[in-house]
Amino acid sequence: MIRTEFLCKSFGNLKVLNDISTEIRKGEVVAILGPSGCGKSTLLRCLNLLETPTRGRVYINDVEITNPKTDVNKVRQNMGMVFQHFNLFPHMTVLQNVTYGPIKVKQMPKGQAQELGMAQLHVVGLDEKADVYPSRLSGGQKQRVAIARALAMQPGVMLFDEPTSALDPEMVKEVLAVMKGLVNSGMTMAIVTHEMGFAREVADRILFLEGGGIAEDAPPSVFFTAPKSERAQQFLEKVL
Amino acid sequence: MSDDWLYNVSITPLSVLAQGAGLVLDFSRIRENIPFILQGVPVTLSFSIVSALFGFTWGTVLSIFKISNILPLKLLADLYTSIFRGTPLILQLALIYFATPQLTGITPTPFQAAVVTFSLNSAAYSSETIRGGIMAVDRGQREAAMTLGVKYPTMMWDIVLPQAFKNILPALVNESIALLKDSALVSTVGALDLMRRGQVVAAEKFIFFEPLMIVAVIYYVLVMGLTFVAQQLERRMRKSD
Image (spheres, rainbow over the protein chains, first blue to last red):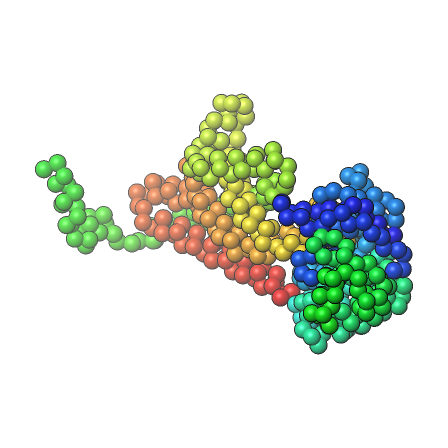
């Protein structure tokens, strides 16, 4: 589904990603972990070209999106993304946020888009908030709307960039519950997170990044009990 | 000796000056001219509205040039702004009104020449304001639209510009007020706007204070009206907060 080959990203002289070659298969849930500054968010953002890789290739369903001839917008329609700071459109109501993509990008008729939008809001448990503006929502509710907005494009894969890091502790749970529902529905997911318990519970694979490279690629049962790399051991000692 | 006159004037009591100038206000003397002056309101208003509309539209285009990564467009927009900000408005007006016939053989009406000048000029100023407004919109907004697969022009129009304009509305109101008042400059090329009509009446009746006072009050009322409309607009735009 997603494949990277020798992916490198530098910001000026700062090398953030160094030769990342990995793969996320269809239906797989991959949690990307690592100390801050290790490049995990950058890796995620390279997958839909929010960051342009300095070198290397990214394939989505065997289409090379790093090829300048590829219509990135077309590819992005199939990749939902959820941000740390929600990034809801503040001048649109909740329902308008959710239906914006289907209407503007997929040219879906408004009525049909609203039906779809309401269905997605139901999935995240926010049907009754359809007509309010994002400023009236709590952080957790905002993030759930953001998830609904991404899902309304009916993507084949969902990317989560620290979806609970900006939330108050009591709101983390409701967002994780929605994400767990997605996992159970068989969605392909890549999740950058600091929620170790969540990663351990839902991920099929853990990618542990360190210094811009993959230091460990293992199922959670192995990663959390018997990590091979010294850096991963230190990391786990600190966070668990 | 040579600067005696200066000395004299500075010590002349105001009351004497006023008497000398005959400062006895008598608005009844120009009562019959008031309809003539009021006919300047639609001229001044339509002139300001058309100029603001063209100016802000062109200013938006320029601001998008300025933030684009196409270097020639960026340079063009910067050069444009520097020229229109770097020369007096009244000179630009004179150039466009008097020099255009010489260059092209087309003689614009005073109204046309003034609309063109004021649009071009206010575009230069507002493009900077709008650029600032666009840059102040959180980058995440753009990214969220991009990840939905929204194309750049649609994203600008639906997501970035509405938020930018909401933030810079007070600055644009300032710009509009300046435009409304600066429009008095069109009187210099003979358009019969409020200012010019005041001057015409003054010249006809040989009294200055009364017609100019009336014109001043009308300008003030117009600016207050504009301010009120802008406040209503701002309130409406803030409903999502």
